[in-house]
Length: 108
Length: 108
Length: 108
Image (cartoon, rainbow over all chains, first blue to last red; front, side, top):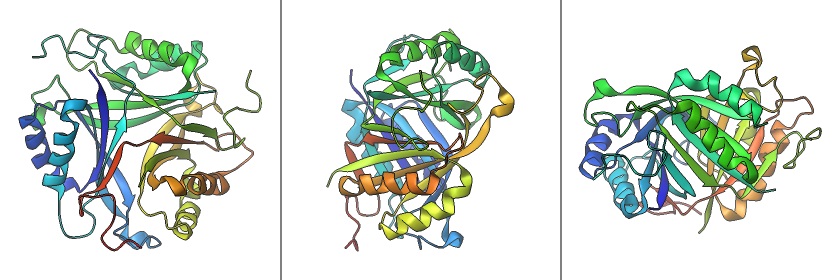
């Protein structure tokens, strides 16, 4: 199984919707961090435009990476500036510590 | 020298043991962030199961990546859900700002 | 357009200078997180040497990655220990959520 690392910077208010959406895709395992962003949507030099976003990190099987990125864009999409970004990075190896393998013991 | 980027999401209470273990491997340079996780081990839809973990990030020479991942799994291993994950990502370039190179001035 | 993911761990006091410098390169979109570090520059086993740094994450077009890494090293450079690190990672895909594409609508 090949994995990818999906990183998104999104507005905090869409997190609930994202969790629900990812649940329907059986994407399990999402890490959330508060970050400060200076994006393309802000006056880069003005601290007052600094915005609080969340960073979402998901390790996902390659077969689900497209659906995961689309799910993030669906829930986070907005025509106003500051909607955020999604990036997909390659992963050499992904392991669950409990099983010391890529699979979960009870994974279907 | 080739580097890899090791990312782990683990329980906060194993951090001390991890530092000690990594020290014996001469793995120097570890970054720690508090994160919120919704893992495979939780009821995905229930906020009350949201858990606080730490994210550990380590840039390590390729020759030590296996030992580093094993060290993390050794200290963080648990049969109960929520033990966490370890991922290894490729790195194009890794530089120490002090030396502007991959090597430290006094590195053995 | 190919993108790279630049990750740097630097002292918090150079952030303002970094923003200004990146602005001159038209590098837009930088994410900042407070992290705790145990670096090569500390007594690895001593908690009292644990230092607060910031982690800077930038997704940048390949053509700007060298200039971006140099900008970080220029502003963060110091001969004293703890100057930090810069790493460049490969990116498979980078998307702006607003446009669902790699380009911004008004990008020059």
